[in-house]
Image (cartoon, one colour):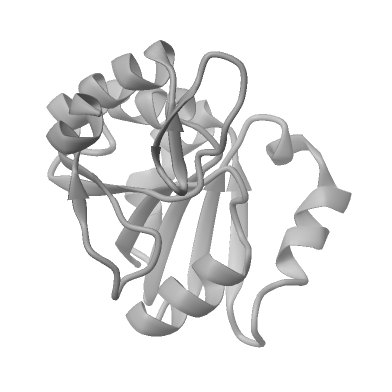
Length: 160
């Protein structure tokens, strides 16, 4: 399975990802990397219920993803790798699974210590540090809420 979308989005599997990105890219599989969800069958089923027929999802912890992501690359189809936050994506970057990947930032919403960078991206110092590490490991980080929207490069996000 090729990984055609690597995205940080607090909402994980939802309409914007499934309809906007999934239909645009022809995705048929999602890998959700989230330590808490990896152990929660009922939450996994809730997320799977948002998927169209024939589209599948697999839920893993960050250590599981680091260990098994290469195996997923051998499967057929097109996929997306999703994390809820920059910390998990950073763990994947430090684990070596993001080399030569383009990491997309989607819904990172407001909260304590986070400032508005875009309508859909709020960053605090921890997220900014994570993104620098991710960019160094992955090669490219940018924000884009939908595939038809304007891409905002990381240097512009960090300058705001």
